[in-house]
Length: 181
Image 1 (cartoon, rainbow, N blue to C red):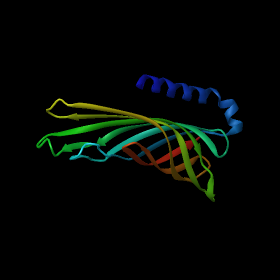
Image 2: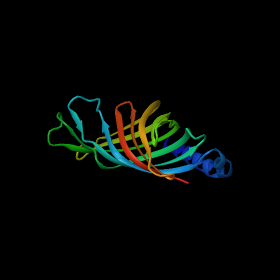
Image 3: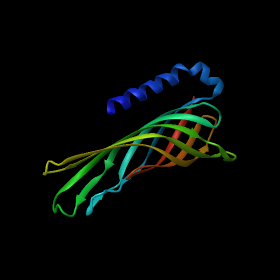
Image 4: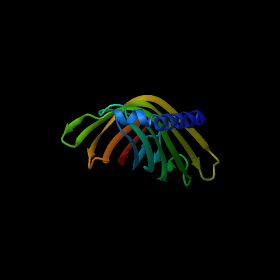
């Protein structure tokens, strides 16, 4: 599945760049960088997972002034320590990454402030490893969801956004900067 998602993401990015001559009349391309925190609510009783700090990148293309398509990936780079009360003295770690394709609406609320509403398919890959037990639990989630946030158009080429995204037991809160070209 991971290979299919990577191929699909690459195809969308290639398609976006290949349509640049047509796209300039309809809108602009943009790239973004984001960070925030990921919180995973474990299904097992007595398990705690610290928040994970991710970094993410996205590519977007404005179909119209208020509608865009986005492709995004986020990788956990820090945090994610796991403790289980039923495993005294044992600790572990969660590695997580997400990938998504969205249709995004970003209508203006007032002046330079806009609402960001996105719907699409998100893929989340979580891997829990305990130190000495050689336990390796992998959870892959994919689902169609809708999420939202707020954005601010700082200049004609720079926007900042704060977003909330959720899939099953994984919540992502992020802040990012986008550059339009």
